[in-house]
Image (cartoon, rainbow, N blue to C red; front, side, top):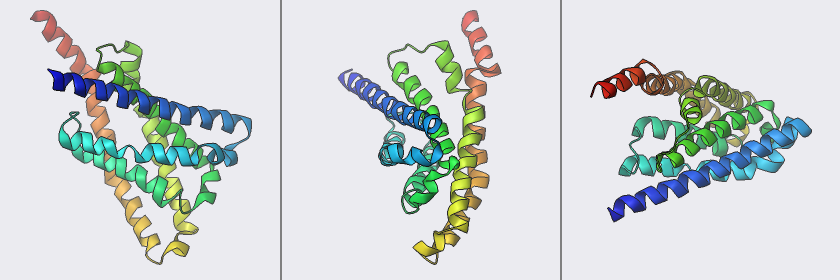
Length: 214
C-alpha cells in the first residue's frame, strides 16, 4: 500500500511538473511568435525546450520498469525522434531554429504534452474532466501531422543545408532518419487511432453498455 501511494505521488508530481514546463514553452512560443515573429522564438525558448525534452527519457524508464503501462517500442521511438531533433538538428544548426517550422514543431509538441501530462496527473487522483479526456484522444488528429511534418521539414532543411559541414556521414544519417519516418509515423498514428477507438469511439460505448448490464 505504501509503495502504491509513493508511486502515485511521484507520478502526480512528475506529470504536473512536465505539464507546467510544456505550458511555459507553449506560452513563450505563442507570445513571441505573435509579437515579433518566428525568428525570435528560439531566443526565448530554445535551451529550455531542449532541457525539457531531454528529461522525457524518464518516459522510457517508466515504460521499462512498469511504473506506467506504456508500450516500450512506441515510447522509445517517439522520445528518440524528438531527442534527435533537439540535439541532432536544432543544437548543431541553431540558425535553422528561426524557421517557422521550428515554431510549428514546438507548438505541436507543447500543446500535445500539456494535454497528455495534465491528463495523466489528474488520472492519478481519479479526476479527469470529459473535455480533457476528449482532447487526450482527439487532439493528436491535428497535432501529430503538424508535428511530424514540421520535424521532417527541419531535418530536410539541415540535409540540404549545413549537414555535410558537421560530418561527411551526417547527410546519410539524416536520410536514414527521414526514411524511418515512413513506417514510424504510421505506427505512432495507428497506435493513437486504436487508443481513440477504445476511449472515445465504439470501443468506449461498448464498454459502457457492458458495465450497465452488470
